[in-house]
Image 1 (cartoon, helix red, strand yellow):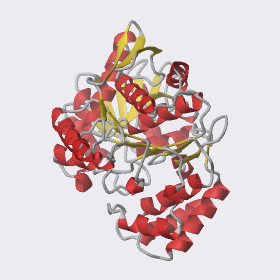
Image 2 (cartoon, one colour):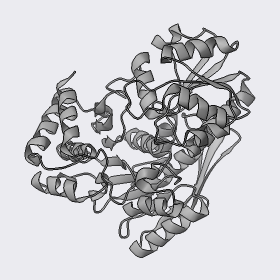
Image 3 (cartoon, one colour):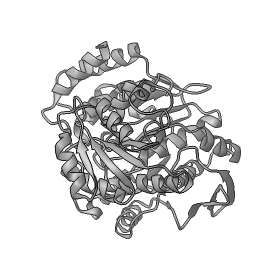
Length: 439
């Protein structure tokens, strides 16, 4: 266990609740730290239910293609906490070092002086402190949960805000009412700050429009002020200013056309003349984002599956993500026919049945696992029952290795998709040894 691991474990004890949405605690700590949140470069603040991470990745790739130094803050991490904090530097950024992360966490812990504060709040304060000490051109900042009272929402005047597709998730914190969830996401809108809005349901969009009107925040809405669509194997992006003819994004899946379009809209709202068509094109083709329909190459997991299999990984975990992933797998099936086997593990706060439903008629079988080391993991046998209730053939396995062995021998030349949780994706990537400090 590293020094930062020990500190992070200690920070978990500073508040009895893992999640307690409020801005008071982090505002108090940031004041004691000298307000590092006021010393940041222009911020692109990204909220939404699905697609946040991909939009962040596209924005970073486009800005870095233009030679910008880009800080990036995301959550959760997959393998190591360091993945959450990427320091922008000339020629591309890098994940925060172990020594610097440990020192900054200890500094925040000392200045907080034992006061109640959640893990996410104190680590977000540490990220802002780190970012404030390195000059950069932009900070791409992902909301942790919700938006209105998320710790990242202490940024008073971002350059641009973004709202990706809104759907139901985290009902224990955000509720089961879609307009209410949309209101939480729209809480990041700021006075006269432009917002790029991805495609939304009518209910969610109505709420976002209402919040924007009260804040005089100009909206750039998918299907209205901008459009992104595939034509003849290209991504066409059109807004009120021009039509961009671009390559398809590197990240697979039709939903990535929408994510890429949302990122393009956000970057163009910066009104930075040094960011050109070529930089947007380079960003689309160079983008990298682990565990989002990621095809796994060489690594340790191949000891469990036949050489003629395909092995895919996705961390999506709610019904909307299930629909997007199933659509992507269906399109892949149309191009290259292979039987689809799911290997799935999920957390008990998620709608497992809703996630599995889109795979009915597409997946031949689901092999379920209990996510190791996660106290809220759904037991494999229970998850298999949920998949069966959703209309799939399913059964449990005792470990990821056994699940992959079962998937590999279930049917010749399978396409195996590991899915259902970012926590599971992190365990898988650690087993496979793919994530590096340069991710």
